[in-house]
Image (cartoon, rainbow over all chains, first blue to last red; front, side):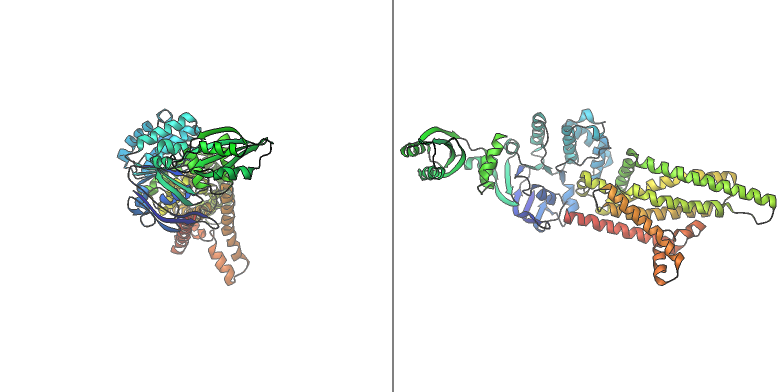
Length: 328
Length: 255
């Protein structure tokens, strides 16, 4: 349904999207995942014909975004990051306007508006001015606007940002109910969203494609491995972090060791194993053998979040951001 | 065409949902009414004086009231047009609704013409307010109808031209105020250019004078429909709308 090949978008000084290729089949819900500024919005804007690509090609339902923009636009429903609403209009009036703009004949417009107001649960505000609506309702009106012409492809830029938990669940359910008949791409930087709503996930970082797979595969990919948290204390109270780290790295089956915390002479590490190996016993042995105290040793699961960070953050600073996010 | 009308209707709806339409109409109605009152009072005094003292031919209502008044209506227009066009694209850019328009299956040209037509219809509505006053002259006098119609056509052409320039400027910024002020100064400049012709008669001043929006209205005011002036307004309108399309396109490449 959607085909992107070697897509590159350069702005004056920065490369927003760098040679990305992917395909989305009909009826899939695809999560477009990446930190802020990764190039998610830019990619979506290219797909919706809002921005032309610098290089590469993108097509929707077989129509190229540069060659046949009108055909592409006809098949796309788009919800930008801030819903494009006219505050001076009433909800029904706005939906009628967008519907007509998207090419719905005037005979069908009333029926379509009723349908989407029902589907997006905005029936109780249909005669209100958009400027008077709360954030949650605005988001839903935005979504109603995107599906009004029953497009083949839905492109949603952070559809749940700024909503309260109940509204988020409602939007997710709505998206689930739309899957099948529509192909959906939704961008987000919240991982649980992808875990809950999407079949496939595309991870991009700094404009580059990092991973593209099903959600299940991606979580399984590292499930064979385990992550263990280890807290080590030295008898003299001042263990040398590099020494301990080296020691842990040398234990059989260990793939990498990250220093997470160091406080009052205690060092906390996160140790990841190679696929299929069990390292807890080995770690305990190594620590005791070296004469340090083993305060704590327990397995931590690898969430999609960890996978995401592993994939996106190669540099050292990654551990710090991860810590920051966990405490939030 | 369907899309043009759709966008035009939406534009008119927005004008009347905000205070802009009412403000513009009220300002115009007040100023025009006051000037109309003064002009007709002076005219009545003058004709009374003339009938007492005798002498002189009959005085034309067209020449002494309607013509200067229509010219004056155009001048007020110069000040009102920035208020009408400043939000046209700037507001859509600021709130992000431009993304809705540009990702909908409509052509850029349809969006631009729809918006310009909406603005022109509002301006036409503003001019309609002056018809109330002019109608009084027809009720109590016998002015010629044709020069009045040609005059209004001229006002619409002149307005359409300035509205197109305002629309162009509105695509260049997100800030309504900046769009309004820039449009105002350009309108003012195009108006002041007519003064150059007054000083000397060199080629430069002739060219600059020709570019002035106001000099081309003089014939319309007299009731003369000259192709030269109609073409001037139409071509400047077309040029501005064409540049608006280019500016909108460059928005996509830069954004």
